[in-house]
Image 1 (cartoon, one colour):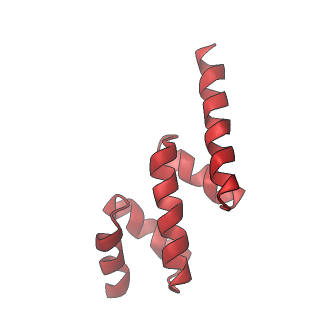
Image 2 (tube, rainbow, N blue to C red):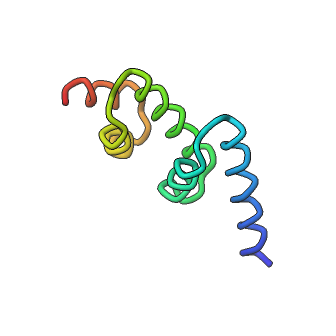
Amino acid sequence: AVIFLQFLSYLAACDRLLKQGYEEGQVEEAMEMFQYSEKKAAEFLHLLAQFNDMGFQQNEIKEVLLLCGNQREKALEELVMK
């Protein structure tokens, strides 16, 4: 029963993130990367989109965000130095 409730919670979190306009693959990946923490996944997806709009490469953004723990200023600094 607990696993089923966790799964429902996961689906609800994914649904909320999808409704914010993020792609399904990215939502699933972010949820897995952050052990199903909707808050951390949402921060990651927001920053990923923001840095992507600035013209940085997605694979570099992901790497830097993971290394910097979703800290925007630190991640931006790292991306600019690359």
